[in-house]
Image 1 (cartoon, rainbow, N blue to C red):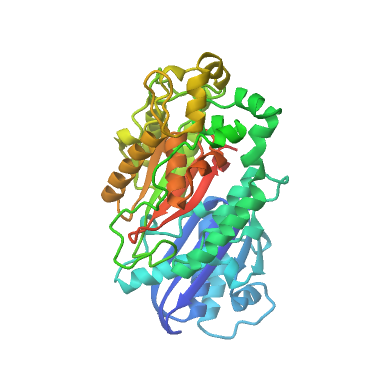
Image 2: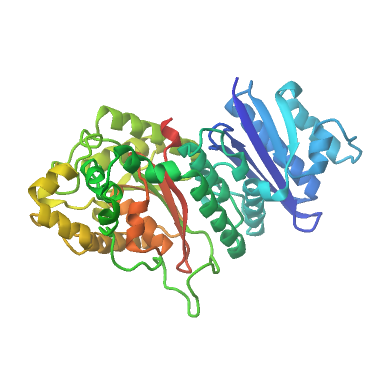
Length: 476
């Protein structure tokens, strides 16, 4: 029997006044957002809006599975106690709404729980978006929502249970911390939540592969993955010195920074451009941990990679926020992008700047093979981001310039939109690093799995917010 969590809220700016509601249906096992609902309902009271949110959330759960067992969480003590049968419903406006809510699903399938407001941020934000839309004379549109369906749950203490360091729990915790309000202060507070969630739940993704390979720097380097980030991650201190995406660590700007604006949390100046970053699915070279850039054989997706592409396509279709699809020109990305685009009914645009690093003569080789054949060149590459691989490869400094230019072109073309970028390890990590304003070595402290999702939001004031990193929950 399916199990869902419904979180709902409503608000009125005046009580009574312009009112709206928001509701979200979550998978309690993964923290994934399964459905979002929001609507501006005209002039009403807070309680009416809260009941409307409950009704919308229950209907969304019923549409997903009529036999579902549902836990309803709301910060309205009135609604929770009345629907639980502990308080009488006296107000004439509440009685028909409570009756309507009670008919949506059998009472035996529903449990109600009160939660504090700070644990109901996702639904609260949807309600505020609905009221904002009403103020403009419009209705809430899912495609314009910055509640961000990739956020998942709205309380990190409700991340799915699992073993210590479980990557799914970590991803859900991070997504949970990000389902916040849109003010500068709220985003600043949420950033601290994300850092705490990441530190608490992400240890296995940071250290798992490197520790598993055992031994010192040399043995870890010998077992390094094919992509530069994995090579550096597995290469100990020398790998960190490989400072892969050198160049400016400043926050990228989709538009000119206003006079007087400073780095850090400032005015968001409207809906951000959100880049959902998808690493392509596996090729035959991926599990073999071979260098696979833009100067090699341009491999196709393996059967496993095609299954991964189909899974991420279904996940993104369910979330419903992607408005455009842009891909690296390399075949593995184009195939992954096409699988998603076909599911979403969107075309695929090609951006040359999103291609992977050209590894020159190292293409197709393992880290150990490169070390054996080109020891001096490899050491120079590890020591400086300006050094290029043997045979006319591309330095990480050059990659950063290329990716930054592509980022700026895409921001100019997609202001305020949610865009899927299907690309590779180095471009994804470079975009995340630059968004954080982190030093180059931060690139090699991130795990990035095949067909994983990350996300960065870019605001018009020049600030950026990393919202998701290495989410693979859709592959489970």
